Amino acid sequence: MRIVLLTRFFPPEISGGARRPHGLVAGWRADGHHVTVVAPAGADDPHLIAVPHPTYPARPSHGTGQHEASGIASWLRTHLMLPDPEVRWALRSVRAAEAAAREADWIVSTSPPESLHLAARLLSDRTGTPWLADMRDLWLERPQLTARRGWLRQRVERPLARWILGRARALTAVSPALMHELDGLAPDGVPRAVVGHFTLPYAGPAEPLPAESFNIVHTGAISLSNPLSEFACLLEDFEKLVQRRPDARLWLAGHLSAHEVAAFRSSPAGSRIEIVGPVDARRARALQAGADALALVSGRNSHALPGKQAEYRSTGLPILVSAPGPWLELVEDRARLLAFADAADLPKATPAQTTPAQASPAQATPPDDSARVAARQFIALMNAAQPANGSRNT
Image (cartoon, rainbow, N blue to C red; front, side):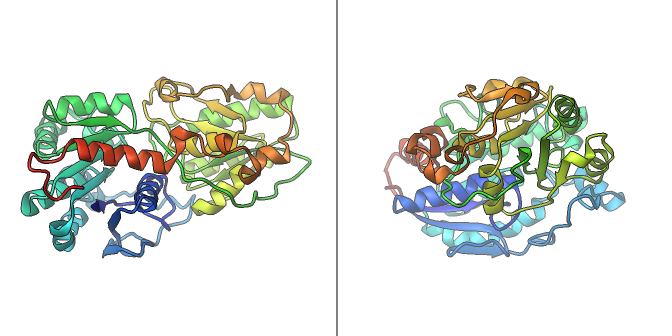
């Protein structure tokens, strides 16, 4: 099958949003499908249609505050550009990808940003190629983009979302909560499936962390990824743990806001907190593999399950949960989920636990975390949604 994938995030960009499209591409290609990736210039892929983006691949370092755009121009972009400020880049993607889409069997768009679904609809309309829309975040119900929460924006954007999704031939979402929203936006009868978070196998080395410490690792952004995530809960939980377990050390590897950095550094437990900063996917996996336990935080009012939990589960290590909320209902295997307080009695990890390559195949790549299995779910859905004449699909 020939697939054109539209994605705003793709390696080497340091973003959790790059995890899902990268895993899908790897899974599809492993099964012999031809995939063309439409992504910002600077993305690393042998079959890339590069569309220049003003902020990619360069990103500011953590703690500068530059992530949190401000000013009149930013306000206007956020509030007046529908469905989101990335729409100009998405429309440029339509022009760049049209020729490839005409030769493809399927177009796949993955959001956020939701403007990629607009681009995919336009591509599908122009070329006749069927289109699958994949959603990783809620669009209008409890949206992460704060500008979408106002009643006027909701009244304007909801019909737009329905129009955009009205031509999708198939739908996927990372959770039942997202699928519930899709059910209210997309036409009845369109084939759809929940395809949860997954991860590529990691067989690389573990990064050595201090042997005298009980090392807890958190990889990825917190509130910069999900504004409903409560980093203060993570900090409070860790401060309480240090009182009971002085050898505990928290490693934060990812983009942090200036406010988060200041809070972690000024904490009474600040000497036990290591702010590593942004790291690429390979080092994030190495840090996870070198940990004694992993920290997972979202928000008490959040329905967004952090995608990193798929990587966490593949390590076989205990996962310490902070700010439990509705998002925990989306975790299928909760056997390794523990409260932060439980870490006071945990032993340090053994080498077999901290090196996925040495773990059993079932532990290293659980079936529900396999990118290849997830990619096959997409293919099965596409085949089920073939046009009546079966053309341009295999």
